[in-house]
Image (tube, rainbow, N blue to C red):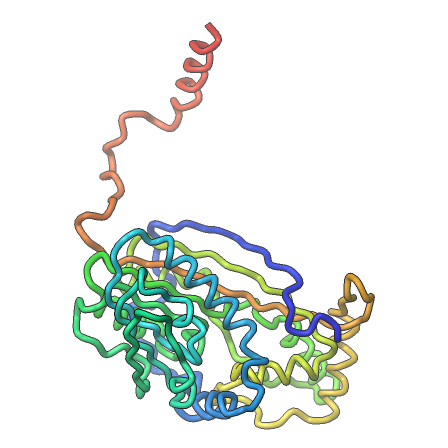
Length: 339
């Protein structure tokens, strides 16, 4: 089988952000709900969790969960109380060791997935079923909140970020991963072309994703500081579009938008098969078998709740050297070294 569920390429782009101007009106929660989180998405996750071969479809979430937990290990401070927000089947909790956190609360909208989630020895686990999008915990009670590939299904990201900031202790940290706007762009464009060819119009078969340019503004407006945002692109090969669609369903990452079409016509699907193979075909590097590839853009973010001990930027006007003099100063230092 052609590279099914195997990583072909991973490209990382790193950006460190200290302050970003909020983009748009992100200070208020939106009244528009795009996703049917607690009906369609919950049902999709329940069905996926009850499959006999559920482990087959965990490859992306387990890989990203491992990478996210690795970032947590880099934080050199005591993190006694931790929250796994949208923990699913424990893609993240199985990588959190007792040396990192002593108490771990796992939240998810799927009861079956929560039952399947496991931890590591020495970590006290609490499981909670989410009934709304917000983290309802006492103020200043948690050392770290982590979320692995769950936030892209929430309607009110500003409100979610504010609820997380509220429950964090001062100098607490928030780490998360979520799918970005370039995710499944091949499938999106293929279905658009196929539907335009057959019916002369478009339907939203792929759910919208958050753009990386918006994340910094959302976090800043929610009270986080010392932000770090970066992305990975995971390009995965499949034999055909049918295996891709099957895996998305097995991951519970199928469309959950309110305005989603409930069916995909046979004509559009057959047209999409041909278009996808023509535009995005990929050959196995060893067997030379032909297949297709799909891109999953993963956005990683880190934000801290403000505390007086954190580093702060210098006050405006405190510099004693002008930028226009930097070239002259560097030249003088170079001349002194030569002497």
